[in-house]
Length: 115
Image (cartoon, rainbow, N blue to C red):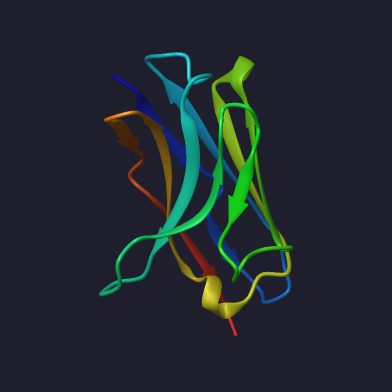
């Protein structure tokens, strides 16, 4: 069982930056793929960024070049550095850890980018 806790959300002006943090507990996450998703009410959850155990990353086209995902397995943590934020980035962000058929989610944190 893996427990997931996000932090770092809040209100930011367009063009600003935020850093989301995710702490995992209950198991070492070195073998897990880690990811950040976001969800807008009425719209399905979408992948924002993903990082594999060996460090390979992928990003949604809408955030590529602006967001950076990273992991620190020694600290059982993942991060999402968000820069040049846009109003369209406003959403609830979720941290995810996945290993084969096992998948764990945080409760989500709100990021609001005002116009």
